[in-house]
Image (cartoon, rainbow, N blue to C red; front, side, top):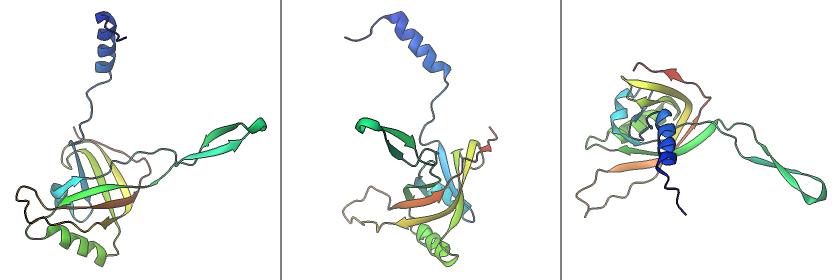
Length: 162
């Protein structure tokens, strides 16, 4: 049976609204130190959040068990997608990153680098790219280069300017 009492539904609505506007996934930017202009070509990236690294099962009498949280996971990873240009900006950036050791620091922004509500620095990042598939029949899609971003996050936050 559904809950269709209008007063009850309005109270839920008001409580949800009181928590504020929701974050929109597209309202974010990823900026690599030394390659600040490349944030305009970043289509997708992981948003860092701290959590337990997993569970530890603790045996108890009579075959019972309980859970304990592992230490906080600061080494993280996630999908990253960059949009290549005809001039090969993404490929050139990756070669330059490899020449300098392959690791970099970056910031993720709720907003853009010039106007944001919060930024989160991430450290010792590197990208493992997958080979992109070029589809010669597809005339309606940008060439996307995807892979996995590996990074470290320590719950640092930079207050925004908006």
